[in-house]
Image 1: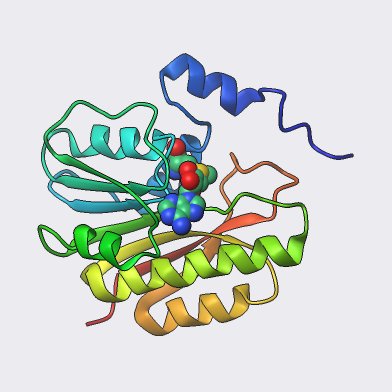
Image 2: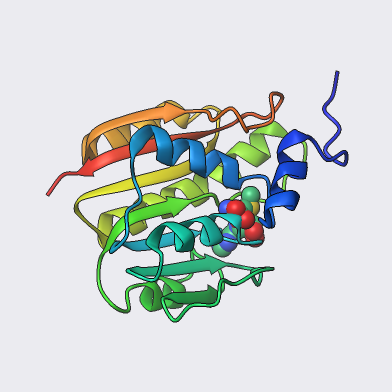
Length: 198
Ligand SMILES: C[S@@+](CC[C@H](N)C(=O)[O-])C[C@H]1O[C@@H](n2cnc3c(N)ncnc32)[C@H](O)[C@@H]1O
């Protein structure tokens, strides 16, 4: 049966009750718990950040110590009040956005939850998602420190195996991971790259 995306589910209700603007925060929490990615003092790049639940969670982990750059086409609904956050409103694939994200130096962690508007046509949707994944890999190539970690959302499709191979070639380890909070009918998953090679 098709999933009803309008009906708030367990995770959406929990997010609302805990003050997060989106249910997706529980995906990052689970990934972070499993792979121990985020720590105070880090510089973190959050691509496809709106409405802002990952940004809020990362800022809570950093707890005033570190820096977070959030990039999205849209404004975040809830920007944590902290001088340690830079918001870049723009297209992550655009050169000027890449240039602005480079301000302040390299990152310890690159996160990308960026996703295209879905059309319902799986080929179109996976192809558009693949462009964003390629772009996130470019950020990881150019702005992630050696030893740094990457989390990137992909829509499982024809080239997801190739994307995983690219991550494995650049990181000490690369795997896919689908958090429990992902909708059961969704074809999204995450590629996790740990320990960027020098
Ligand atoms: C699933 S939402 C991210 C949710 C976010 N992680 C959170 O926890 O609130 C995907 C986001 O990717 C953004 N996005 C899609 N294409 C983009 C692009 N080319 N540049 C920047 N952001 C993009 C969308 O605007 C959307 O806000």
